Length: 389
Ligand SMILES: [Mg+2]
Image (cartoon, rainbow, N blue to C red):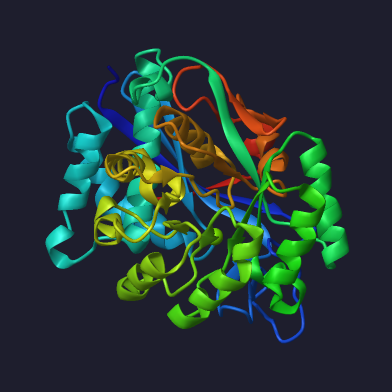
């Protein structure tokens, strides 16, 4: 068992990219300061470089744990919550199970309605670091602590086909298939002028009927439009349809879940099991995002989903890769069907870490090492800027 938390450090991870996630700025999109693009297809802000918030906990014996959460926008807001509230309280807690600490920290502001958003992101970063410290100090892997011992593989699906034309995207998908990957997801915005059926036909013709092909709709449709899209795509047997309607519109999500034939996948914006509970009957696939949920809530969502035989296919966001490593191990522990593989992000930033899982031949190869298994190496530390609290 680790000792009491003695020191809490918060860092911003930043790294430039040649091409922004989902592509560089296009027509009618606009730049918001130097490092963001507002996308016209869904009104959402996206970063032009990789950025996240990293947390390092040190106990009174000098043992450390690393955590990470979103830092795409206003990372100092998350740091302020840690500095003013969660960090000082965490230091007062007796060392114990990390999920107990998560509950104690969440209770501090629960009756005021702080149930998610930046508060939950701060909780997630601390929770991942605490699980890392807890498991490293007892010499076990995170997956063993969560119920599945040893090394192993977790199937990976290729996320995103960045080229500009259907022909090039089909070539890229075929190239990944040749490298042993049997699943791919594309965003609706990257289909030919929104012609998802045409794009699916081209992919299906080239990849064959067994290849899994999913569509991320990025919250851009209403219920009727989603039902029509589902009918249009039915001949091409989509693996799943992701995030078709507005993320907080539970009634629409339930209507879509009942009305479509393809599996409905939801969950990348959720923070806690309280987000999942009212949608439990709507989606047959949950996509918890470790950077929002932390390990404690990832596991609670996954276990609830498992109780009604829903499938777990975790989401992967933009970051250094600490939360990604935690997600791979938690996903492995709960028997996830697959895990998102952001091929334009993962391997590049994994070079900044010691101990990451490799992703080859259609799967992540998860080592049997203590904790979540990664920490920034010298190159990684060079991309971290400590926020002085
Ligand atoms: Mg998505």
